[in-house]
Length: 68
Image (cartoon, rainbow, N blue to C red; front, side, top):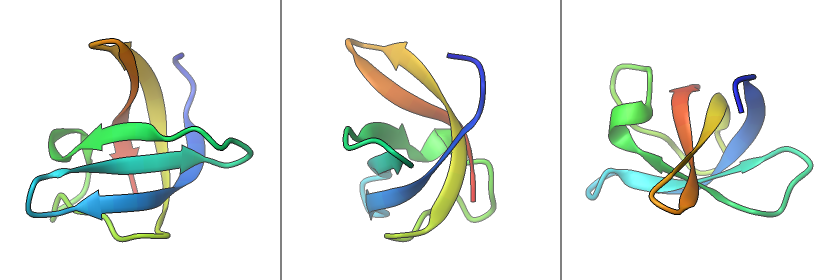
């Protein structure tokens, strides 16, 4: 998928640098890693609104180019 989608942060573990996002209108979670967060600092907060692209890698959907 190439287009940006909007959603929110379900959970994010800043110590381990990963978490899960939920696109609006969906129930499935999308995995996100610190390296894909395009803000400084590279961290997210639960319930924070974000936009991102979705990619399929390593057998699952992952968020890329995450912008708070």
